[in-house]
Amino acid sequence: MNVYFARDGKMLGCYPDDGVMQLLDGHAIMTSDYFWHEGMADWQSVASKWEMPPPARSKGVPQTAERVRP
Image (cartoon, rainbow, N blue to C red; front, side):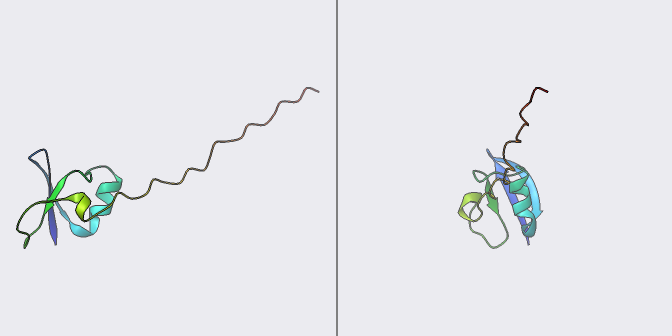
């Protein structure tokens, strides 16, 4: 199924529904945007159906070696 997305009253595009999480992850669409697909009466907030993916886990702050004088 194709899903249409809009932001601030402007069309962002039409995408397959199985790629929505990738669009969110890549910030091509936001949870504050709206979506519509065939069979829906009105546009709905993206946040009403999808959540932002969790942020990528950080590997932490790299440790630096302590300098030791010879």
